[in-house]
Length: 92
Image (cartoon, rainbow, N blue to C red; front, side):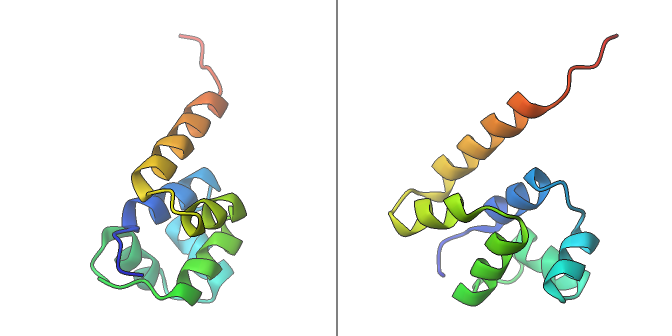
């Protein structure tokens, strides 16, 4: 995949409530591999890596949206809205 999906991958991991280490364990990858993908240091994300990430973060709707042409920014905005709606309110 040639598009920059690094921010999307990070948002999916955070939405799933996983640390980089936890996701790496689920994927049987190293934590540094997860970090490189999230930071964009690995320039190309292979399709199988993307699918594995989607499965590990339980986000099949993202794969469907991506396949049907929704851009990464729109997907990311939708994820951020969901995350902000589900965060518990803390009394001050």
